[in-house]
Image (tube, rainbow, N blue to C red):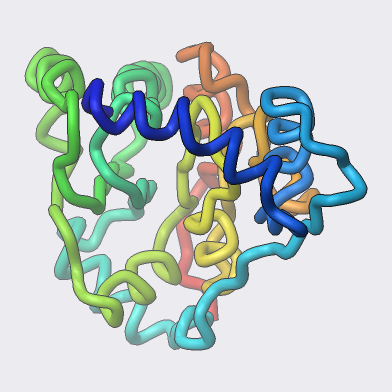
Amino acid sequence: MSPLVLRYYRYFTPRFAKASRRVVAVSEATRQDLVQTYGVGPEKISVVYNAADAHFRPQPVAVQQATRERFSAGKPYFLFVGALQPRKNLVNLLQAFDQFKAATGSSAKLLVVGRTAWKAGPIFEVYQRMHYRHDVHLTGRVTDAELVALYAAALATCYVPYCEGFGIPIIEAQACASPVITSNCSSMPEVAGGGARLVDPLSVDSIAAGLGRCTPPKATARS
């Protein structure tokens, strides 16, 4: 973030937290962050989880097939959803996908859905150096209906940030019956609730292994 925004957050956030009669946190992990960082009493903080919108739901086989034909040339694909910025850990995900492809010979693609945000330069540098760059598609932003279809047809949703207050793509993917690969730190295990394969976001090997374990011998559409 910019220096001005950083100064604002550093000055005002602890004061807001301490002056509030009640603080609402979106996860237990965020609650603990508030306690440890700002010294807010835990009894003052209520955890109220986010939820996926009702339109995130499993899709018929025909919709899944049409989505793969449109976005991945009919091939199975892994899906990332989020802004292209350092915290989302796309550098390690791209390197892990390259490693997974080299080790398995899989025909799977990787779709990266989201806007280009701040400090995205290293992401594109790694992308340009990839051996399997032709199997990675940067879609930019998509419509709400397209996003639902992309989740539902994915081989797995791969969301491996270094830290998150919540991580909405995890529950959106689960609502669409997409398997989830996510980080073993911060709020992600809590949000996944035992319904995801956890990997170490700092380890390219761990992420690549997670991709490999989510690849069936022959990908089939889910009803």
